[in-house]
Length: 102
Image (cartoon, rainbow, N blue to C red):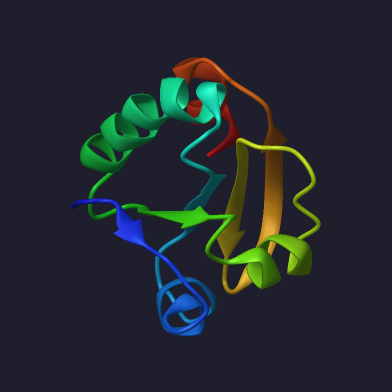
């Protein structure tokens, strides 16, 4: 499964109403740590296909979603289950830490 691009138009359908847990990566193009973590997030999306959805929200394009979830620093990963944010991680993290969060 590929990584979804999430915005205010599809957030409810893809994240809040998802039957699978959803890992959302809040990022921006100018953020070096975000670019470093992106391939790791992509890898997790491939490995966990069918068990987990992975989406990315560009905070510059979607400031409303970023503020709705209190995203002050990026990269921020938020894990949603049953439409609720249940885990959050801020900053560049190794793959093992991200997998442990799941």
